[in-house]
Length: 325
Figure 1 (tube, one colour):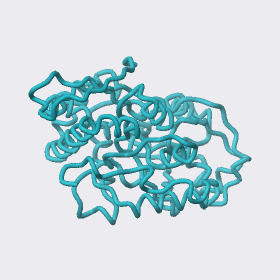
Figure 2 (cartoon, rainbow, N blue to C red):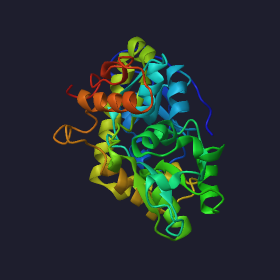
Figure 3 (tube, rainbow, N blue to C red):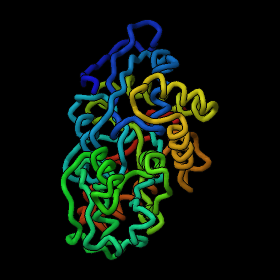
């Protein structure tokens, strides 16, 4: 994993007149197709054009990524919105500044021959628990909403890649993950079609991954935040316009990610379906709607004992640094 670092700058607004600001960006987990725009921004020099020298590193789950951003070990992170809400309720201070995956792909995956086809079939089954993972953070809400006896599920504490391996070896009964990342990987590795239970199909449609920055960085260096947001939106647009070039950049930046072009392409195709909600479908890339965040907060209040009124949309997101906002 690349080393983490810290950088701040209060230099002039013209990026061409100064040395690029070094910035560390933390992924949610391992590199996968939804990360392509960040890699396009680095490989194609979009961040440099905006006065930023960005380094992108893998993470250990959205919860961990948000914490490293909040404590300024990393300046920015690609992390889950629902996890951000839960951590905000615990006193963490950070916001999504660019909404990327605005519809969640949190899912349960099982083998076709497992006999597990509906949520209550998970009772008494085994999995791996990765506490920092976005899907693990909201699995209790899925369990409550669908009648699963959460206490009956058995499992060990593992990281997401280890859980995937145990699942493919059939050492655990089910996997849980962002389908946008793991479903193409798992189906490629097992050469099979998996059963998928998407949380959104059961009324748990939550704000998912976007760019997160700490309130401290936002207050102390708004110019850097604005430039990073603008560069990221530009990179998303470039990837939408030429996805296969984006895959080229992914393979160049992360040659050891371990995925074929076909898998990365499918991950990107899945990600590109999640860029908007019904409320933001006519808005520019990256722009979020406060009502979608309120829906996420309300679902967590109802299903995972998030304290009522502990978090408001303004605590966890802002469009203020996006171009034209």
